[in-house]
Length: 262
Image (cartoon, rainbow, N blue to C red):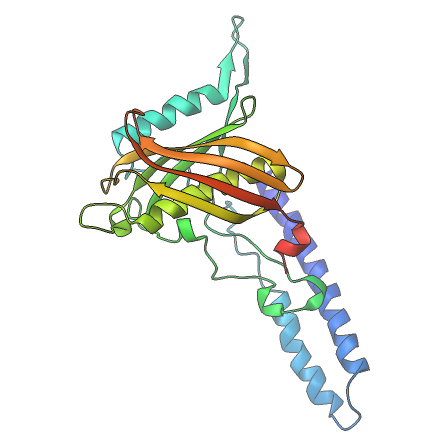
């Protein structure tokens, strides 16, 4: 099914790109000054078509889900993953398996952006773009994390293991890396609740440092949802919840998909 879905998506992308580039050709030729050589312009426009017809960036086997366990995960991270993942599915007395209150959110290292109306064709397919928290290929070196959302309680928890490339003070996680994971988790939570959002404000208080390589929990909970505004609170604690490392509040504003793709 995944293979057929990717094949259909490729066809749609080709049709969209043909329509986009054809419309761009007509607009340029229509408004072209009479003194310009039309044949040289047509030749240049062929190069634009080749860009818009760039191949689908994912392999036929599908993109890698970075939220799944890998050998770099410490035993504590594996344990917490299994704990929350076990609550994504429940079994009835009759042996029937049903969806549980928790959902594990898949996580990939890239996002596709399409330029509207034929503008900025360089953005049509960002082949080299990578998500900031997933741009280190070496397993365990950067951000290792998995996010779970509780549909019923509208809460979110992230199991996070900080790799050696996130060092700030000697042996400790950089404050910017902590802010990044908190922004990512709360932003993901807000998007799950309210659709596409952008961070408007993130206020952080650092309470105690996080040792490099340790496993912590990032908790996100709803404060208030008012129109386009979603207010969340966030805490980073030790894996057993006994120590508070960082806390924050975040304000997220709902935006239209069209604005995100500009």
